Length: 150
Image 1: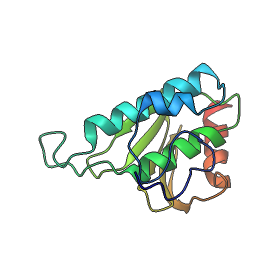
Image 2: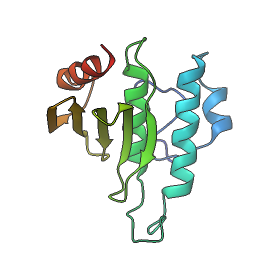
Image 3: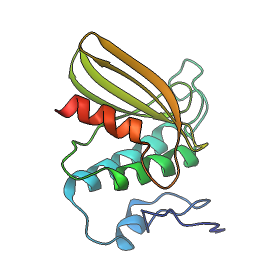
């Protein structure tokens, strides 16, 4: 198995290797249950959506790179923020959705190319955009999560 680079925040998931819950949890330090559940959801989502046309309507496959970015984001998420609903998009992106009501929603997407797309509705205000994602969560993403959770 060719292991090229290790994810910065998730010691058990390696780029260019197969996903395995067993391998992941054997090499990961003790983490909180919500994080563990989110990681398990991402691994399962990859298994279900990594082939073209996974939805029967021509969806693009979810890439390992988008999963790695999503995992890194979960590890960077400040404590106290709720875990998102995790979804696969027909575009092949991984989406995280925080939903309080139909007028209080924030969604981000990971495309595997170090970019986070986002959109939110906060009452009568709307926001959307794209941000570079590398070593930290972009400030605008954190700002919008705080808006949703304040």
